[in-house]
Length: 263
Length: 263
Image 1 (tube, rainbow over the protein chains, first blue to last red):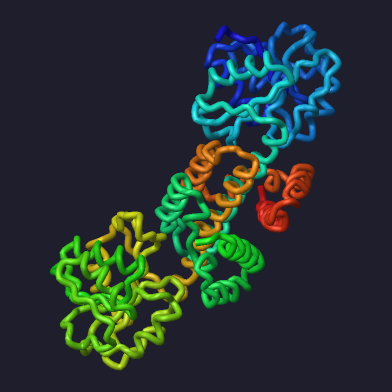
Image 2: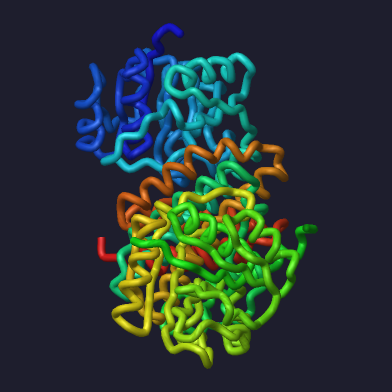
């Protein structure tokens, strides 16, 4: 695909990872906007020839696509106030936000580019393996976004706003919540002075299994085998921790799931 | 280590994996006991020269170590009724069961060999990478079990019964509960017709991160950033599913954890 000229609106983790990956693939960021000029400058300085700005008037930058990477609740109020090049393709990068949150007097060409990954500024992520979910208000712009995203990732999915929000909820369970389970395990072991590393092989195997089989079909543990004595033992042990209720609620959910599965 | 002669009491997943790994390492299983003779025969037929039996009198087998691999609540009542070679080393393989559950009139040499892994009969597991937790009532038998376990695994840990049960609870969170989170994600996506594979890179990255950092320090998602609007959106979306309450409870737990973390 020929090179595209871009505006990056925002200077957080997604803005950093996306803009760097896009420049590496031959596109050019003309400007980085942030409410805080210093934040925009810090990212712009890492890019080829991007200007930093905190002005809401971005109409002078002759860009093809504006990519809004700000926190979800900021998308609608911010985009409403931006002066943009006429008829620019305006996209956001949020999983939980419908495409309609993008409202701007200068353009009706709207889209979404949602990279399905957790980003930390400090840790480089190879976007090649990160699925990017795409939506647009026209078939032409959908194709345009597929071309753009295809230059940085090998996995693209066209999803409606409704499917995207379901995917986002599912990702919260699979990623944020499973990490919280790891975190609780880590804290329980720390308190006993047992190194967390002893769980590493089990964590690897559990995730590996869930990548190869429907996770419900490989569910193990006291709840899955209806082992009431162990459930009681664990619950009473956890009374001294903040997680006794959570242990019971998740165990109940597994028991319900298993009892609904015909074996 | 010189070869040991073994009795295997039980014929479930742990019995299968342990007895095969031990024979591969040069030890010999003299007999496999099961309440159901056919189950004992099925496992014995896979071993070098093991006899199958359902008799509680095992005193004629001149074994060094008897390994009890039956469900947790069966350990105490069963071992009490077994006739064993005098002074044999008698061990169980359970995470949640104290060493004292082993009571037998023929021996006071007691121990535990707890392999920290999820086993399915169908899926071979390389025990080399599976931590084995050891406990014994004497230093000599602890050393004996370290030698035995060291022939099948590279990671050994000597843990008291109390530490072992904490490890077991932690493993339920890290393994069983994180798998349930995957399972819920899988079911949410199935309902929308979105392939689960789209989450695979995120699942891999999440586990990878938790293996390299304290999981609490890499917690992300709407609860971790206190994004009330997304939490409300997800909760209302999930009202049509069995998991709205669970979503809220886990999110609350993350919110509590984050608010207690000084940043």
